[in-house]
Image 1 (tube, rainbow, N blue to C red):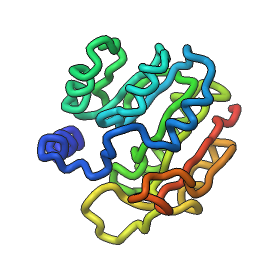
Image 2 (image 1 turned 90 degrees about the vertical axis):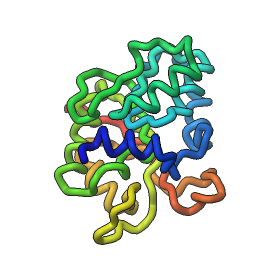
Image 3 (image 1 turned 45 degrees about the horizontal axis):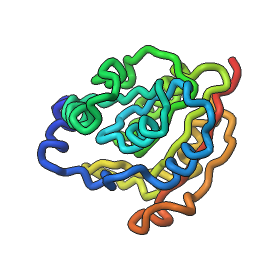
Image 4 (image 1 turned 90 degrees about the horizontal axis):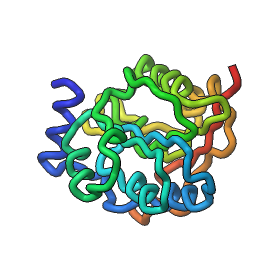
Length: 198
């Protein structure tokens, strides 16, 4: 089963345990201190894209919502009919071309198979898509990466994530999220990473 079919099936089956139904508090708190409403923002693997909806409601005009499955994008369009259709992207993140000031990570890293090549490709693509000085901001699951794990999301820990991210990013902040929802308290890392100058 390819990735598009896999995720479409998950949405159609309602097998979306990662979906909390509203913007996650760590990301909402970060969004609330942003002043430039013209930032070009990408949310890859956005799913139902509650953070994108919140950004849109706050007047951010250059928010791009990406998912490999059209199902959550169609749902988002129905909920927010005024959201620009050309900013809803049904694409594979790894082949996307663009340039952004800010990319939000919301359990996306943990959604694909945890191979060395996938994780290196993730970091390199994030760096490629960000403008000089751009930031990768988001949440990573701080849960064990189990051998033979079939059910996503896949886990990791602070040391593991930094081993991939440090070569391309300056670590501005990366620590246990203190304002996670109750069900995820102690299981999320919040990070702010700034693209290194080439």
